[in-house]
Image 1 (tube, one colour):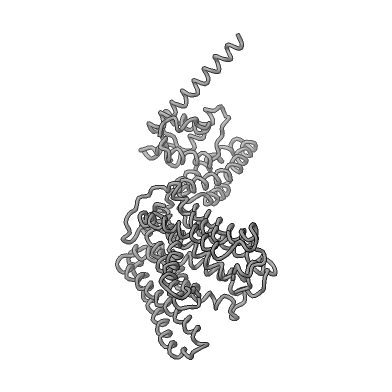
Image 2 (cartoon, rainbow over the protein chains, first blue to last red; image 1 turned 45 degrees about the vertical axis):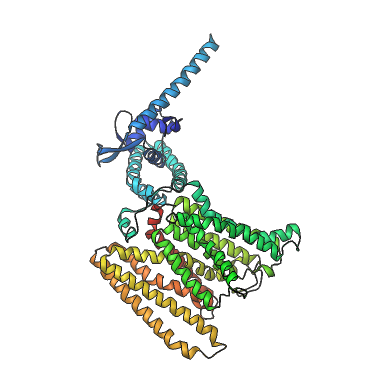
Length: 113
Length: 481
C-alpha cells in the first residue's frame, strides 16, 4: 500500500502514532500521552485505544516492541512501537497538515491585510 | 473498587475471540490503572471515567465485531489449534476471500429463491394462466441448469475454496435431470422410497467429506439442504397455497436471508456465528410459513394457519431440529475426528471405530424405515427385524468401543482439557442419525412425549452442538473461502 492510502489519519490514530514516535510505550502510557499531546481534548476509552492499536498492527504501522515489555511500576507491560512504514505515514500526514496549515495561514493572512 | 475491574474483565468476553485473546489482559490492566487514577482525582474524575467507559464499551464492541467479520481473520485459539489442525489435510493458504468468491457463496441460494418464488409471484403479476409447465421448465433451465453447467466446472477447479460448498446443491438438479433423461418413467423423488433414503445416506457422507478439510465449506454445503429439509417438513406445498403472492414473497425472502448468511460465512469464516445465524434464518422462514398458514398442515398438529405463534414455535422447534442436525452433524463428526487426530494412534483408531459405529447406526435406522414402509403391505418385519437388531446392537457396541479407545488416546496424550467436549460429543454424535432418520423423537409428533418434554432437550441439543462445533471448527475459519 502507498503511504497516501492511509491518509488522512483520524485524529486519535494520528495522536497514537505521534505518541509512539520517539519511544515504545505500553497501553496506559499511550492513553496518557495522547491526552497530553491533544491538550486534554482526546481521552480515549480502553476499548477504542485497543481497537485502534489492533488496526494499526494489522496495517503494519506499529509493531510489538521486540523487548516485549516496557518498564512500568508494578507489572511489566507489552509495549508498542512505530514501524518504518508507520513513521513514513506519520511524516506524510504531518506534511499534509502542514501544507493545509500554510495554505490557510497564507489565505487568512491575505484576508486580514 | 476491584469489583469494577472484575465486571470489566467479564464484559471483555463480549469481544471477538481473537481480539480478546490478543488484548484482553492488557485492556484489563489499563482499565485498572485508569480507574486507580480516576479515584485519586475525586468523584468528578471518577464519574467522567465511568461515563467514558460506559459509552466506549458498546461502541467499541460493535466496531470490533464488524471488523472481525470484515477482515475474517482466523479465530484460532492456540491451545486448540493443534487439535483442530489434526489429520492429514493439506495446510491450505489462509488467503482472505475475494468479493466475487463471497458472491459465489451466496449465488446458488439466490437462484433457488428466484426459482421457487418466481412462479407464485408471476401468477399474481401476470395472471393465473401465466405459469405453465413450459414456463416452469424455462425458469429451471435459466435459474438452475444453466448456472450449474457453468458453475460446477469452476467449483471443481477451485475445489479447495470454501465458497464451492454452496454449489454442491447444484449437483442435485443436474442428477435429477440426468435420471429423468435416462429413465422412461417419470422420476419420482418420494422421501418414503428406499432410493431416496439411500440418497440421504450418501448426502450425509458428502456433507461430512465437504466439512472434513474445511469447516466453512461443509457448512455452506449443508446450508441449502437444511432449508430444503425444513420446508417440506412443514408441507409447504405450492399447489395448495391460498395466497400465491404471500407464498412467493416468503419463499424468496427466506432464500435471500440464507444467501446473506452464506455470504457472511464465506466472508467472516466464523463458524459459530454462521451456524447460529443459519438456525435463526431457518426458524424465521419456517415459523413464518407455519404461522401465516402457508402450508397444508403436514407434520404439525393443527391446520393452517397456526393458532398462535407460541404454539407454532413449540411444535415447530422439534421439526427444526432435523435441519439443525443436517447442519451440525457433519461438523460434530469433524470435531470427533479433530480430537481423535490429536490423541495419537490410539485416538485415531478410536474415532474411526466410533464413526463406523455411527454408520452402522445410520444403516439400522434406514432399515427401520424400510421395515416401517413394508410392514403395512407385506409382513416383512419378521424378515428385517433380526438384521435390524443386529445392526443396532453392533452399531452401539462399536461406537462405545471406539469411544473408549478415543478416551484412552486422549488420556495418553494428556490432553485432558478436552474432557468436557469429549463427554458432550459422546452423546451428541449418535443422536444425529436418530434425528435425521427418525425425526426425533418419534416422527416429530409422536405420542410418547409432550411438547414441554421434548422442546427443551431439542433446544439444548442445538445450543450445545453449535457451541461444540464452533469450538472445534475454527480451523475452517483459517481456510480459504
